Image 1: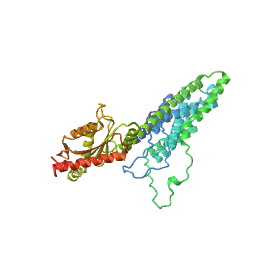
Image 2: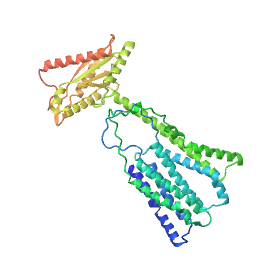
Image 3: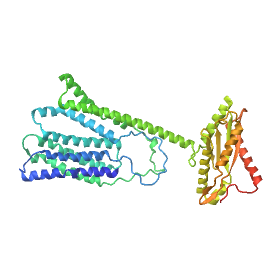
Length: 478
């Protein structure tokens, strides 16, 4: 993005070379005291158009230096409106065309009736309009997008102003009669200084990012400083409509006086109405997209808050909320609650033998197999470490199945899912987990109590298997 705007702005002066050659030939071959404005000078219009597009493409976000920041978020962060390329273009066109309509009623209308008309005058006015377009885009970009390269922006402003001043002389050249070349000194000076300043802007380095104040330096924190009310969002919303309102008033007064609009005011009024409608459509579309982005970000944050980052299963907070809701439903309507508590046997041995990366790989494998072993409406969660839990939604598809039988069936499915060996850091290991079952079926209970019962049942199951198998290891390298 940074290279794009530089290429576009740099291409502007280069596109003016053919027209500049024609002017040089005209000056050297004709009367050195007079110059004529010819249609070939329209090639100069490419320069302000390319410069305008380059200004619109100037990046607004600061360039990161590649080092991660550990600074805490600011509590008093202000909202900055989105100011897209499309909105900048539409706002600039609204302002420039409104200014043209105002200038038409102020002077151009009488000038075209009594003094001048024709292609030369139209091209000369086009030069002035493109120069005004550059200035308006520059102001909007500097005020609302705030590009990070302030030095380049300042040099561009100087070059654009010099170019705009020089191009106003083209209107004088388009008038009938010969013009003394000495009267166009401002045009020549601006035409020379403008590209030079633009060239300097292309190579202007960025300022180094300001370092945060050191603790104890006496600088007051931003949150404690007295803040002035932010007016940029209001200007962003209403600035284009200020000249438009004045132009609309002139159009309305003319329509009431003459009974109808004709010629250029009619076309400008139609164009302004179309631009206003298009801007509203774009604004509504961007606002809807912004709302959608905010909702998506909210859903992502909610998902991250409720799910384990390593395995993707529900975390303890979400599992506890769902279990409390199930217990409340049990107490109100008598619906049974079934909880399975799962623990990976000898998980610490895997971490110590193969490393924490292998331990994380084992946790992800167990979570994936656990997720496939439970039903769609059941909730599988990682409570922390190597501990997992499952909350059954109901007894099962068969209404005659008791809650305990449904829990035992789910436990067998989980054990069957863990039967397949897993590769850990190039070694094969057999997964075996201990499962405890707890349920609430008619008696008063609480979420904490039923989870504790499932945890206790799991430890009883683990101890019984150890007593049965002696000192055999349930998870061992193959």
